[in-house]
Image 1 (cartoon, helix red, strand yellow):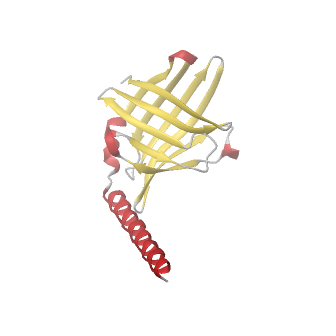
Image 2 (spheres, helix red, strand yellow):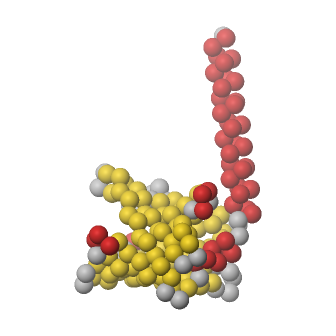
Image 3 (cartoon, helix red, strand yellow):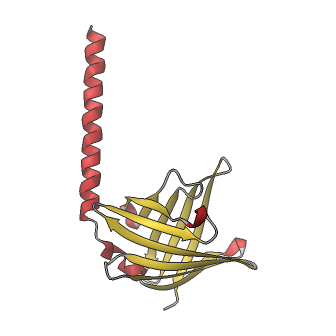
Amino acid sequence: MQINNIIFLLVICFCFSCKNNEEQYKAKETNFKLSSFNWLRGSWKGGIVKDSVSSYETWGTDSNGSWAGKGRMLFGKDTVNETVGIYKVEDRVYYTAKVEGQNNGGSTHFLLSDTANGEYVFSDDEHDFPQVIIYKPTSPNSFDATLKGIKNGRPKTVVFKFERTN
């Protein structure tokens, strides 16, 4: 009987700790302002030097204060275009990406899951790759965009380094 009481108490403690974490997460997201991305406004050029990949992004806000952008990646002679955005629904912030020729023309939505250490971490565990997108301003005129996840059963990380062009 003593073991059952201990297990019961552990389950109760676990449930309360999960509830507290959820409440803290909701409070953090509720107070999050889309204006935190003001540093992103403008045009950017970046890429992955070792892989000869060039990337361009242009960001601005729409009439609702949401962020809207266009992206383009050049892989040699191949070009990939995407429409990107950052928006808020109730107490949640999302990064969305719609890549030409992928996902049957649909968008993928990554939830803002962390804002520690000057990074904006967006996650979608169900996406093929990446499952995590991290935007981190490194100066007023530069930022890193990191893509992380599992691809073909192996961990993969890709870092794009961007510089402001205007």
